[in-house]
Structures are given as C-alpha cells and as structure tokens.
Image (tube, rainbow over all chains, first blue to last red; front, side, top):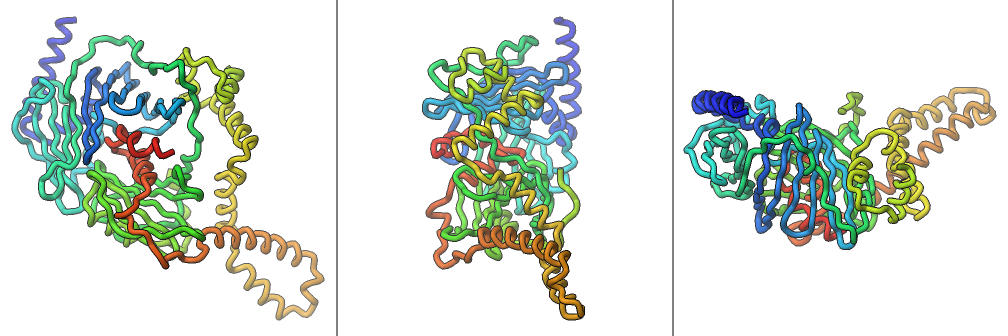
Length: 323
Length: 158
C-alpha cells in the first residue's frame, strides 16, 4: 500500500511539473481531481452577507461518484449525490422534505471536465503558490476576454490538484463570492457507511411535490446572445409560490450561467421591471409583448440586461427537440 | 415496500431506517412509479392540481400541430364558392366543431395567459424581488455554489 501511495505521489508530482508550464493542463487536472479523489473536509461558502459551512465527504468507488454534503449552519440540510442524481434532506419546521434534483457541478467539482468550452471566453494564467486549509495551493486565474463575465481565481492543491478554493471577482477585481476548504483530508478507505442521512426521529419525512422537470423546446429565442453563451437547457415548471407555468431557459458559457424566466402576465399580476444585485447575482426584470421576463445570473449587469432585451418569440414553431 | 410508501405519504412511516428513504428518493423503476401514483392520488383527494401540467403541455402541443389560425379563414373562403349549402354537410360540422373546440381551449389559454397587459403600475424589483426566481436559478443552473445557502432565503418562505 505504501508503495502504491508513493507511486501515486510521484505521478502527481510529475503532473505538477507539467502543470506549472501550462495553466490549462493544471485546470484540467483540477477538474478531474475533484471527481476522482476520495476526500473529506469542511468548506465555507460566502456570498454577499450569507455564510455557510458545509462538511463534505466524496468518494469515487470504481467510477461511481458518491458525495454527502452536510450544511452545518442554519437549518439542517443534507445533500447526497450519486453520479448526477441528487437527493436533498431539507429540514423545514417539523418536517424533513426529501427533494430530488438532477446533476450540478457542486463544489469542489466546479470546473467543467471539457475545458474547451471555456477556452474561447477566458484566458488562464498561473499565479503564486498560497496556503489554503493547511495545504500548498497553486493559484490559477481565469480572466475573461470581455465584460460579459466575471473572473475566477482558483486555488488548486499543489500535490493532488484538488480545487481548494474559488473566488469570483467582479470587473473591479473585488471578491463577490468565495468558496473554499478550511479543513481537508484524503480518505484511504472504500467504506460507504457515511453515505446515509442523519435521521431525526421526531420529524416527519415527506417527499417534495414533484412540480418540475419538463424538458421542452419551444419558440423563445435570444437573438443576440452575449459571446460565448449557449442555451444548455429549457425547462418548464411551477416556481414555488407562482400559480402558472414558468419557462426557464438556461444559458452558460461553460462556467458562468444565466437563467431566463418567461411567464405570461396574467390578470391582476403586476409587472416587474428594473435591476437588482443580490450578492454575486445580477437580476434584471423586463416586459416583452405581454410576457414577464426575468434574467438571473452570477454575471455582470450588462450580460443579464443584454439577454433580457434580446429575447423574442419566434413565430415559426421549432422542430428540433432539445433533450 | 409499497405499503411503506403509502404509510410514508400518510405520515405513519417509521423513519429510523434511512435506507428506505434514500432508495425511494433515488429509484427510477417501479417504486418511483408507485410513488408518483400514490402521490397523485393524494393530490386529487386533497383537491390540489386539477389540470396537471402534462395535460396543459399536451393541449399546447396539439395547438401547435393544429393549423388553428389558418383553419377558420379557409372554412370561410370555401363557403363562398360552393353552391351547395355548406352547413348541410356533416363533415363541415365535425370539422367546425373540432376547430371551435380547439379554438375555445386556445382562447381560454390565451386569455388566461396574456389577459391584459398590466403595465400600468410595474413594481421595481429593487424594492421587492421575489426570491423564488433566485432559488429556481440556483437549483437548476448547472454550476451553482449557492445551492448550499438556498435554505436561508428560499425554504423558509415556503
């Protein structure tokens, strides 16, 4: 076992030498490390005035990725993922609501495994080595080519390549969102006894109402998308608290994402307009042709504004099914 | 297991065995279907959700396929250049009936959807921004660290 670990260490060390030459190679290693390594730790997420500590356990069991995230602050909340299936145990008053979700790139697996999609929008640069969560970390900056996205500073474990910290920087280089480990250890086991929720016997466990997940293709088009952004999904669902069907079209440049919500303005509904910033998120509301359009994204104001104004209804029904 | 499922819906399920819950939540096969059926029955019994979303989707799909806009114009046009009274043809009535039915449903949907444009008095979102949009974005966008803080602004309001 010791010999194997040594071999692994040597392998990582040699990768590390290569990484210091090419920032994209270092990012590639970072993207894979989060998904392939076995680790346990605590990370802190901060956005605006919100801070949460989360305990994470991640294991790659012969290609099967299992993660347990336990939110340590505020309401008890546990997020389990197996591959792209996510199950959330969410305490609400005297109940625990079990929610099902589909795959997301959750921390620390926040970089896409196919980096080609972001290469046209960002420049990667290697920075200094800093200490994060007791480990040496190589800084890699993802600097955007234009003003339609923010930049990302990534701290990648100098030895294992694991993403230790990521900061979202606005166009004035101010940190507007941060997520990073405060404590981390590698696991050397394949036991799965940790992959179960902590059950509170005094609470009632209920499934969330399945209101969502209709993948559709319809006629909403954004004529003039900011460069680098592509439509990656379109779902139609009932947003909690809303009565009618709301369309949500999701655009992404590979790392930053923007949601566009479209719903018909009904009788008695007051239209929303204007602009708002919540932490790292820009929100823009707009009315087009009797429809309420709301654009939400962790992107600069001009990106959500451009998308909001460029939306139109295509009179020709589209025939291509998306998903 | 099915008994346990219905017990779970009725809130009688013994929750100390977590595996069951996880399996239910994650399974895609028969159990999942069973769950959906039970769940729907529960909804119907409580009187929730009368028009299921899928039904609405199917109506809209049918509207897309149906040449709703063109059909009435064509019927009108053909009426003028036929000698035999069109009204006596049963085919006309059945076509007309189906067109009317589709149009009626379409109109209902349209009226419901577009209603009047309530632009008279728009709300500035800077003053009041419904958090459900932010929550839905954080939940479904592919890359969102904010997934973890959602409980703060989102679930407490539900």
